[in-house]
Length: 462
Image 1: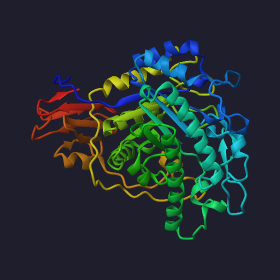
Image 2: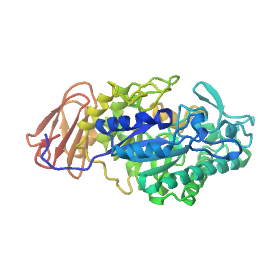
Image 3: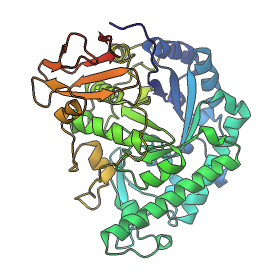
Image 4: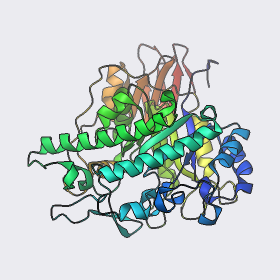
């Protein structure tokens, strides 16, 4: 039920690998995504598909498997969808080098270095691949050349057709963290034995790379209000996340459902509060063939928590792509798969949830460093393998003078419009509002895993 008021809700975007799809299926597929409840599409523009020898770029190289970004933008807009484009340099998990060309990664001047001065190798689709050093001037220059060329191509079509342009690491968290935190590249400078100084060094290196990418996009004509940066992994564990978020709107990974409801709730709350220019959350939909399998049911559960906690923007990664991904919502022809209806139901269920308003000066929980040195803390955080300080469910109820008959069963959040309740358990629970500020009857039974929304003092639940 609802009391009839219309409240703002989170925007939902579907990541689409248009470059893996035949142009003839785009119109039908985008119409299907709009019908499922998506507001926008998110296109990765993959560097390795467009760079030719000598640093030249070709954005319509059909013989190399690439399709025209302009064709995809026009088709999405015909379906009434907003368009977002992410440029990387590392923006997709399914491509060799995460989308960085092999010619770049094979350059000795680009490679991150381990303590023995050998290349830092990270597994990409089971293939050991040299990780680039963010301190490498050669990598910075090649990355900026790519960002500038891609931005100019988008400008040829008109920046007014786009909601945003994202530069950066792609938001997913690679396994290896020592490519940044313990990089022995000669241009990275001396590596201290003090952990705090190592962290500060890594943050300076990462921030310098992000600043260079953003500058390249802006100088190529990108409107400053449409520029975003994608962080490495979740917002609260991303290298230089605080500093980057103070300068740009950010895209960040939503940890997997395995971290638990309370941890997801806190991640979203703290990410929103510590990202003054805005935070968008990427939730993984399905998985690459050689990756750890991710069920859509779990992905949708994580997305439900993010929406209940107040996320204002959500991107479902790999919602539609051709071959090379397991669990997309549409097949390669644009036909809706059965699993997609779970997302449509989720969007309907959460349609009346208002996003969280950022609170200035909110304190963010300090996150520990990775306990396994070469593994990135962002990767560990996505799987819930880092210790963290969780807020207990009853704490959120007590703060609002609410009670529950089962300890730790419900999380609560007040909005400008009313109250949001989220079940965290597999059993029904009853929330009591003795002052009847939101629940007119004084109590409400919430089903396992469900969301309930109450408007003001009317007691209307959605």
